[in-house]
Length: 111
Image (tube, rainbow, N blue to C red; front, top):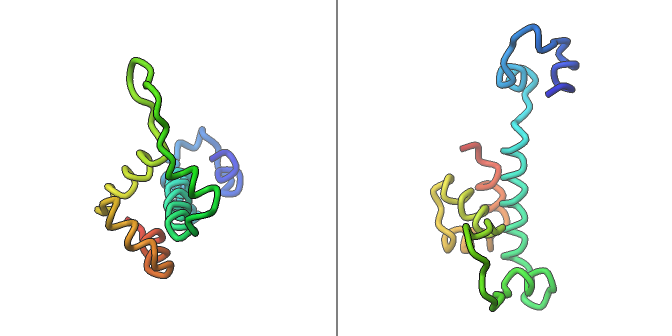
């Protein structure tokens, strides 16, 4: 935000909200950009061939006792949350991701 404010010629003392600065410069929030990249990678992983090492590691399930306390949030959990916010289930997303054009449209759809 410091960079965007400098581009706009503003300081924090001007008391203009970050959302306003981003809207005027037509820049999306960084968290939205990260979510899009995660969904793009998910689609890439779904379309990837089964013998690729990255896909084999992604599909591997570890068999070990989990430590006490709250479970760690996995990458799959984060992707599932992003899909849920866009009203898609995991299976619907896997089916849609097999078609690259429809998946790209889904990922870049502003919702």
